[in-house]
Length: 410
Image (tube, rainbow, N blue to C red; front, side, top):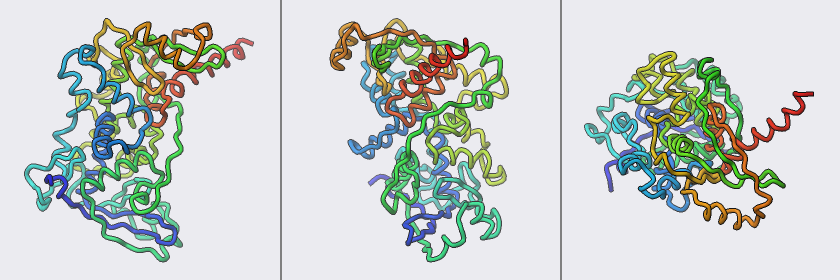
């Protein structure tokens, strides 16, 4: 048994037994730090951790699983080096912060304090304690009076009748379980005790003006994607992509969950993670934090010290597949499926897909689509909740725009 598996943390959970529902939990800094560390996890790392832990029973997180597996299975000859592929599928971003936690979700252990007695806090101050709601809002436990606190949490007084407080132990298995439920469940804490309720996936558009300055929005970096559609149904078949688009997709695996929340203005469709993101930005005062809020709500090691326009320009380039974020060979073409699986493109492989779908070649139409910042963010958001990320994030908005254009001309 590893040291990480032996580490245990304790929280108090208030349960309404009649409604089989967790109302809230009260936790010290060590557990709260582990919960907030979810925001530092790159999307590819989340898939890696869950698939390693659950194997064939790993949950499906939108199109991220197939995007990750496609990158993992793509032959090394397509990458710009062995180290590039290794870092992509096994990112070490923020390992220095994660390894300071009492329990690191990667499974590695704090080096200087295996029993946690001298835990000094990583993101929150060690003396602080916090209340964590069922929806993963986090507030300091000294927020106000009991009645005021319950009101802030959205808990009705009558819900407190017949409640029970349990002392719950969390180890590595339970923390990974909480990560999983936070991504797929309506009520992640309740799901650890009672039957799970699943999130209804949602895909929408984002407000760019809160994140990116006007000059970048007016002069976006553009990628071109050749999309194969079935003429008779407008069904997406596959896309023919250059290296820049594949680099953009693979780069999404390296973006931390908190940074995705920042890109999408805490509107990712992963509602509980959005709540966690909002908690850091709005609910937890800096006096309770040991780190700068920016580390959690916009975690990026290369731009963390940038500010203003410089930071916005960097994150824009990051979304647009800049040369500094290259992973695959630029002279090759790739096939990208609706679930973001990336594979080498050839005439035979393209025809094979069309034949497997039993579609006549005369019913296939090639459409060139421009992918700029807005489209890139829509694809990113769709990838978190949908197994048809290109249809939901790119094709549907395109078809909707085609329908609107004739109306605008009248």
